[in-house]
Length: 118
Image 1 (cartoon, rainbow, N blue to C red):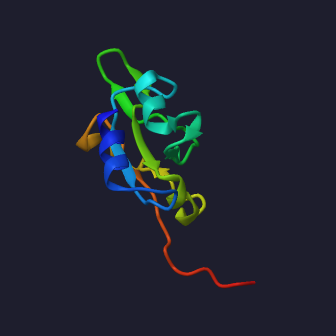
Image 2 (cartoon, one colour):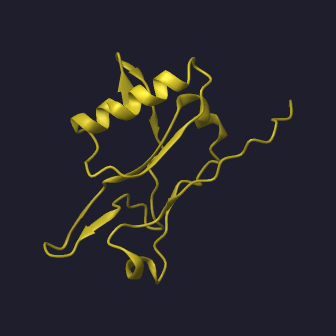
């Protein structure tokens, strides 16, 4: 709620552009997740749901229990969603992916080039 309040107090209107990314320590559908994605029944931020090369969306490996969860996210303001390059929301799953962290690297490509009329 604090994050949402800060953004709402500094940015007004439907055209605001923001990205929230990182470890949220909670799963999709949880109350904290919903507070960051919905406000008053309307979308407040869009979850781009990155996936790896196998189409899997888990982002965190809990080694002691050998379980995987999705607790890392890239959330965008609805006005920013149209700038997402289709298929660019990815989770890096290359050979060194597990060497750096128990969380996997998320990335997305945004395009702000003016759209040419067809």
